Image (tube, rainbow, N blue to C red; front, side, top):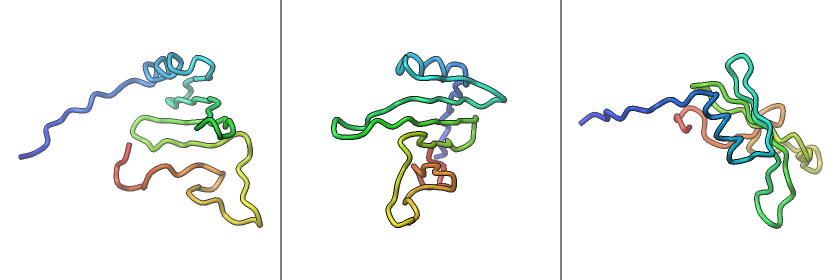
Length: 98
């Protein structure tokens, strides 16, 4: 049997409102059909606080950048799981993880 599941698309405006509800201190705006969200997050009680920027266009992968603190790897080695420009790799590209 085929999968007849219908995925309901949520507009960028509704997604921006939901992000602001969950993270009122964050900044969220939409320009040129792209939602940009900036927020300070602390992954755990022992972690630093990181300011991140997430850019999202419908049907496109997320673009996630750590703004501060600057991610550092000693000896000039490449930071693992990143793309150029210190964009984070959070899933395997090409397998439709979204």
